[in-house]
Amino acid sequence: MRDTKAKLIMIVTVASLLCLAARAQTYTATDLGAVRHGSARIHGINANEQAVGGTGHPHGEDTHAFFWQKQGGMRDLGTLAGGDFSSAFAVNDSGLAVGTSNTATQMHAFSWTAAGGMKDLGTLAGTDASQAYGVNNQGQIAGSSGTHAVIFSGGSIQDLGTLGGPASEARSINNLGQVAGMADTADGHTHAFLWTSGTMQDLGTLPGDSDSRAGHVNDSGMAVGASQGSGGTRAFFWSTAGGMEAIPTLNGGAYSEAFGVNNQGQVVGESDSSLGARAFVWTHNAGIIDLNSVVTGLPSNVVLSGAFSINDKGEIVAFGLRSPDVTRHQEARMDSHVHSGPTRVFLLTPQ
Image (cartoon, rainbow, N blue to C red):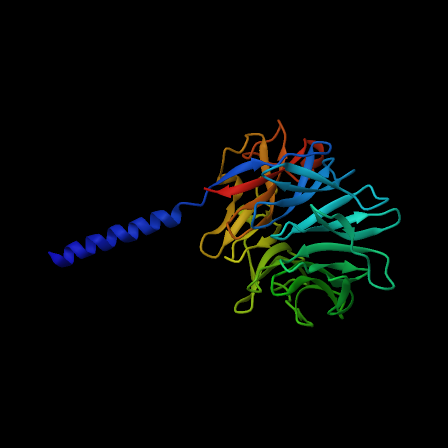
């Protein structure tokens, strides 16, 4: 009798755990709006629900960088002197935003704070252009100057070199100072890299591919990005322990790319599917999930096509197409973003 009771308790417990595992995380969506020409694109979020990106026409013309927070909404950051275009790509937990703006003559990396406004980060000696894509909580900024990946820090610019080829670009920097990006190799390809304390590590490619790029690195040194070859482009997750592994596409699509990973190993990105481009979240345990299927209250005329950043609370910033001619249950290709209606950005909050 006692054994039977114990078995029943075990069955009920296992069944409960299976039900919990099968219940996907759901999210509520907040439309962050737009302050220029009705459209926006999103790139980064910090731990304090502050987000950055660009706002302008649907196809990117006349875009300005923006900073968004719940109190005050979206703020146009303007441009560097002489410029008419800017976009912000990352923001740290202190509200320091970084990005790229044109000037009267060239594209330059910038940093921005609410107190100090937009600051030109300059360029490496002998170069005339720069970009900024990532920033950590120590204020170190990752980007490029000329054709090389760099770190902007304390008024100086450090050249990170390449993997033997002519060019490189840094896309992300974690709180330990590790940098992820892409660099040319000596044999003419471009590979994802992880730079640590002066050493650039080639992360290689997925089997059968020739090129790769890394878009983000978390504080554990886990990197995500995309690997490319004759078979298409596939999102990857890389760790020291497991190396590079493929993240599957949605419904057998031919393209996917991972843009963000938090310290819990949750990955967000964009995947092709039978219905066109869709935003996704992925973990080892749950696999890949179309965010359109787990966001409650999303307007019926909005399709989330890409997710670009996720913080440690699991809050996601995503990009979507808003159009009266589109629903999440029908095909929405990337060119629809130009022709079918304005693009909007959303904060997805776990329920």
